[in-house]
Image 1 (tube, rainbow, N blue to C red):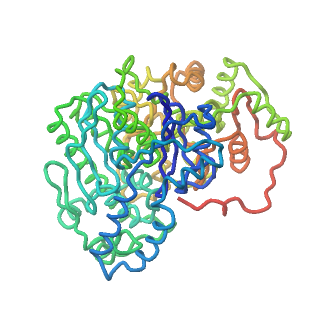
Image 2: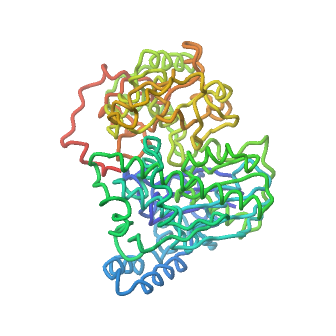
Image 3: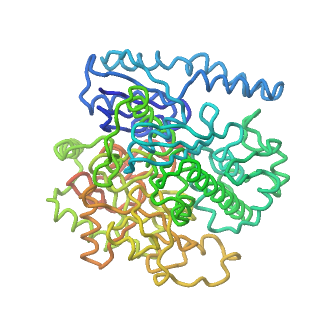
Length: 611
């Protein structure tokens, strides 16, 4: 039975397809439209998934949407009524869109299918939003049973959910409801510190290590009342998301020493300290929720999804606390992953199909390499048609050539294999470089990514070598755990960091792997498994043979405001727009200095809305 899952209309729209419970394909709409966090109906992602599965005419058995639109609309109407007459402007903007589009999901799906020559299946499923999240976390996990914790902004009414999962059964045992939401709380601080909501939360997390938690007590005394089980109530007098267009209001600004930072303005000590403070409070709440989940379910394993599950610093603290024996986080933990979860919830929940026991302790996400792939024949034809000079290599020489370029301090774009599903580039749509270089962080941030200088980069290391570099005893295949760099590799602080210029602080070496060591001596780790991604593993293995270090930098293949590249054409365009030195397209390697001169009619920097 083939089921297509769909998520749409809020952020990170996506589609995913399963065949008798096995994941076949999944992708975000943004990768095709080139609009970051695209929320429109994912017709391109749907077309890709159907094509990848070879589905034509009447071969699709079911379609699942990742939430219940009627229930969500009811929550929105009830919220507006409770705030009236405040919020009239946002009401008048939101309700017509619902009446015109968001309530008519079957019609939207049928229109896409009709354009693709695929018949609308008889079976349409609407699992609840948090059930979709929980299903995306549990069913692909390597566990036979688990507690499942989902935390995000809001679904229909739920904002945090604890589930008890065993076999095919997934049962909700506790929910926390809107408007009290950890995801919305974190987004409020994201907005107040000058970053975009539903996009800049990871920047807030990256900024936190520069600050001190001096506002943490104020948050707990005046903003949020946290209970021992991790549930809480927010002081709604401080927020604007119920009745306006902003996350916070003047009361919030008075409490936190002035108005919100304007976007793109100078980051001050206040923003650093606010970031640290809300990060500490978030970690405290997540740990309390996890302890309660262990108590009420009795399970030894924990699965996580929802946007807050992308907070890899909190995840690292949770792993370290050993509340559960094992932890697994859905790599597409946000709304994109809801498409996959909806399909899996339909298969195991509505259809009551059994869940096979996980094999060999592995998850079933296939490394999250679930997107489009381009053959060497396709890439070769593209290069020839465009007249772009390149050299083709066999696998061993390919890996050695890339490793040598990294050692020569070259910055390399990788576009090979299947594209990753989720927000992280995991070696197939990545920019890579030398983690040992004290200059590489600033070079990549300012000359390649064109983004804020404080942003850290993640390392990719051979799975077998992770303990050589970091204080962690578990794998981290999806770059969703932060752990300390080993103490013997670190360089002591100078003691003047609080008063130092931000750019100077960023560029100070903190370990013998300075390009991936954050200011708090941590790193967001990806462990690379030879069986899951042999090509990427071969590059790092060749670099280890050359330098003795089985670790490199890995950041997503894009510039600021741009979605991660999908096609060879996307990759070449990004390569030529930046100061990258080499481009890898499948088995082909391109050198920048040999490419024809690049011309564009308009300034491409105006093409992307800064995130």
